[in-house]
Image (cartoon, rainbow, N blue to C red):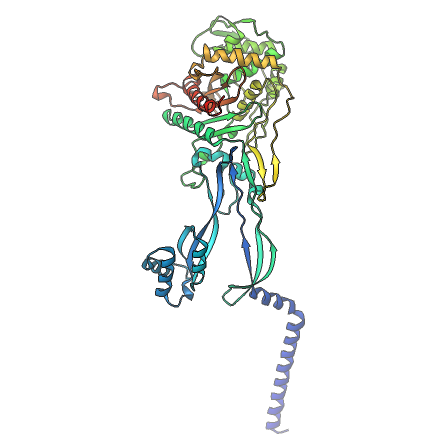
Length: 564
C-alpha cells in the first residue's frame, strides 16, 4: 500500500470516528438529556409573574383606619434599550410633569443600566400608566405601601411591617397570616427580552388579606396618648404606660406605651420604644396591689369590712417578718377601708398575717397573677409568683402591699376589671371582628358569659364603692377626683428592685394609679404607670401626684366622649 492510500485510509478512519462520535453525542442528547434540554428550552421561553395581594386593613371599633395599604408606582428606565434619549425623556416628562433634563440626568447617572428609578411612590392614573407603557425603555413597577394614620399614638398596638410586608410587632405580627392574604402566580410566554407575550397558565389568583376590627377607639386612644405623653415629658420619665378597658367585657379601648415610635418610619427607634411595656415589663406593683388582697381577705372571712386594725403608729416589728414602716406618717386604729384609703403598709401586713400563706397565695393566683392574660398581642410576660413552699414570714407580711411579686400592667388592669365587674372574670382583648376581603365575617369576639366569680358581688362592690372611693375622696388619690362623676381607684408608689444589690433602688419609683368611674356602675377602668419620674425636678414622684392627674384627664375626656 502506497503512501497515498495510507493517508486516505487514515482520513476515512478519522471521519468515521468523528461521525461515530457525533452519532453517540446525538443519541446521548436525544435520549438521555432530552428532558433536561426540553425543560431548559421551556424555561427560557417562559417568565413567571407574582401578584402581591393587598394586606388587610386594621380598623378601630367605629371603622376608622389604623393601618391600611394602597398602591404606589415606581417609574423606571432601562437605559440599555433606549435608542433616542432626548425623545424618550421629553415624552415621559409630558406625562409625569417633570423636567426632561432631570430625567436624563437620572438615567445617565444610574449605576444599573437595566433599572434607573425616575419617580417613586407615585399615584398614577390608568391613563398615565397606559401612556408610559407605550414608551420604549420606560417601565412601571407597582407595590403596596402601608400607612398608619394615628402614627405614634397607636404604634405598639397596631405594630409595623418589614420590607417583605411581614408583620414584626403588635396586631401586624399577631395576625400576620390573616392580614397577609395569598400571592397569585401566572406563567407567560416571553420574547427574547423576557417581556410577556402571551399568558401560558394562571396557577393561582391573589387573595387580599382580611380586615381586622379592633375594640380600640381611635378617639380614646388619642386622649390617652396625649395625656400620658405630656406627663411623661414633663417628669422626664424612663417609660410610661396607660390603658382604658371596658370592665364588663375586657375590651381594650386604648393602650399606650412610651417612649413610642412612628410605625411608618423606624429610624431612631430602639428597643425601649419598640417594646410594649404594658405586657413585657414585670414589676413589683406596690400599693396598687392592696385592694386585691383586701378583697380576697373579706371574701374568705379572714377580716370583716367593719373591723378595726391597730397600725402600730407607723412601726411594726416582729420575729420572722422583720420591720415594716409607713410612707410618711404612722397610723393608730384604722378601719379596713381607711387602710386602703391611706395606703397603710402595716395594716395590709396584718391582713396578710390573718390570712396566712396558702389562702393569700390562692387569692393572688385566682386574680390571674403569675399567668398570662391571653391578650391578643405578642410579647406578653407571665410575671412571677413564688410557690407557697418558698414563702416566708416576710412574704406573708409584704405580698399584701405589693412586694415579693412581679406583675405586668395588663394583669393589674385585668384584676381591677374583675372588681369593677362585680367579681366576675374578664379577659382583656383587642380584636372585635375579622372580615374577609369579600365581606364575610370570619370571627366575632363575643363578651364572656356572666360566670366565673373570683369574689362575690357584695365584696367587689364594697371595695369599689367604699374602700377605693375613699381613696379619691379622703385618701392618696384626691388628684383623680372629678366633678361630674364619682371616681374610685388606688395610688401606688412602688419600689424598683435593684438586681445588682438584691435590694431596692432608693432613688427611683414607679408611680401608678388604677381606677375608674362612675363608682355605682363602672363604665371604664383606667391604669396609668410612670416609671422613674425624675425626683430631681422636685415636682413629686408618687402615684398620687404623678399618675392620678393623668388618669383624671383620661377619665374626664373618655366619659364625656362616651356620654356616660
